[in-house]
Length: 119
Image (cartoon, rainbow, N blue to C red; front, side):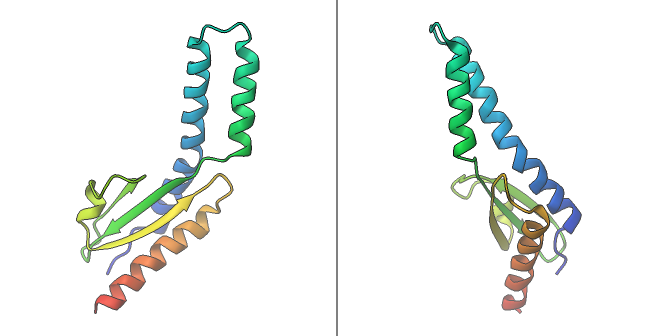
């Protein structure tokens, strides 16, 4: 079985690691800006502190087949997505302090182990 390329999985993990927090910060800022309150800066600061103290994690599922095709899905999408049509799946949680090389190794290792078990 061909597993997904390690460098592509590492890059995917790196991108997702920072995108989730960036998106939430943007949403919080937009929310505070649209509120009719006098001290918006304090609210934005407090929401940012809350986010700093409660890091955002995102679940990543990577699926592949015996031909080297692979796909991924983030979050819980009730098994709707390209990766769920693949016979082998690996699941990891990406947090701001995650080591992307370790995540990539784990994902590839899970997929290789599943394939070996299927033989």
